[in-house]
Length: 488
Image (cartoon, rainbow, N blue to C red; front, side, top):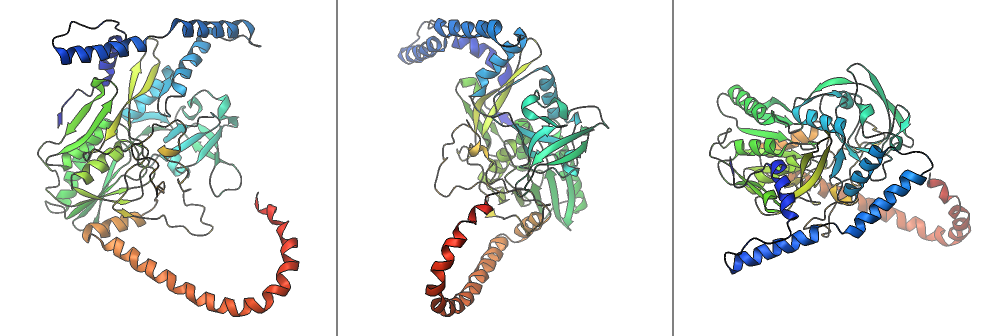
C-alpha cells in the first residue's frame, strides 16, 4: 500500500495550527511563491480571534459565574464553552472528556465493558440514535435495532445524563434502556446485561462449495490481519481457490480508515483506494493499492445497507470503482468525512472533522452514500415486530448541521433501508454465481403485480355509478369529522 501523503493528521495538525496563526509571510522566492505565501498570510490574519469577541465571551462567563441561580463550577462551565465551539460545526465533531476519550480508544482497539452498540447523540440532547448494534454483543442479543432511539437509561432521561457513561459498567451488571421504535405505539424498556465486549470484527463461512462469505462488522486495529486469515481459510476449504466471495458490510458503522484500506489493498492488484481532501494541505492523503490479490481474481459481491457508513463505504466504493466487485443491497449511510482525535493536556480530547473522503472515481460519499448496482428491499410482513425500522428518515443527509455533499439534493434521492437476515445473503450469492439474475427476478416479479389490478377495476365501476349520487352526499359529512381519530 502506497500513501502519497502522511495520514497521521494528529501530529501534523498541531504545527498547522501555529502556522495558521502566523502574521507575516516568509520572503518570496518567486512570483508564484509570493502569491501563495500572501494567501497564507491573509488566512493567518483572518484566523486570529478578535479581541471584542474575547471580551464578550469573558463578560458572559463572568455573568454566569456571578448571577446564575445556582453556583456553577468553573471547570464545568469552561468545558461547556469548549463543547459549544464544536456544537454547530457538524454532527461528528465533538468534545470527549477523559472517560469518553478512553472509551473511544477502547472501542477502536476492540475490547471494553459495555453493551456493544454504535450511537449518535441527537442535537436536542434528548435521545441517542442507534446506528447499529455490534454483532454478537448484549445489545444485538437483546433485540436492539438500527434506528432505535434511546430516550432514557435506568429511568433517567438522556438530557440529564453526561455522555453515555451509564451504558458502560462492570461485566454482569444490568442496565435498562427505554426505546422508541418506528411501528411501536409507545416507548418500551429493554434490559441488557453488560459484558466485556471483545469485538470479533471478522467472521466467515462457506455458503456453498467454492463460494465463501466474510462478514465485517466494524473496522478496528486487527481487522486487516483477521481478514487475511479468514480469506486464507476459505480458500483452503475451497481446495486452493474460491469461485467467489460475498463480502458483507451491512450495518458496519465504520471505524479505522487504515483497516478498510488494508482490506481493499488485499483485494486489489492496483489502483487508487481512497483520497482525502481537507482545508489544510496536511489533511490531503492518497491511498493506492500494491500488487497482490489474496483471492487471485475470484469475483466478489459486496453487500451493503443503510447502516453501512464511513470506512465501510470507502471499501465498497474502492472495490466497485476499480471494477473488482459489484455492490448489492441498499444505499449506504453517506458519512464521507474524516475525523481526527486531538488529545488535550488534561486527558480530554477533541474529535474534529478535518477532511472528506473521495472514491477512486473522484466522487464524494458525503450525504449521498454508495448506490448499489442492484437494489434490494427489506422483507416486510404485516405485524412482524422483529424486523428493524426503516432508516428512510435517518441518514447523513438528514442529520442537522451535516456537511453538504457535492451531489446532495439531486432528484430521486431516497435514503436506504436496513436489510436484516439471510435473504440478502442468498441474493448476493445468486448475483455472484450469475450476474444480473437478481435484477431479472425482480423485473419478472414486478411484471406480475400490475396484472392483478385490472381485474379489480372493471367490477368496481358498474356498481359504483347507480349508488354514488343518492348516498354520497348524506354520508360524506358525518364521516368527515371522526377522521381525526387516526392521528394518535
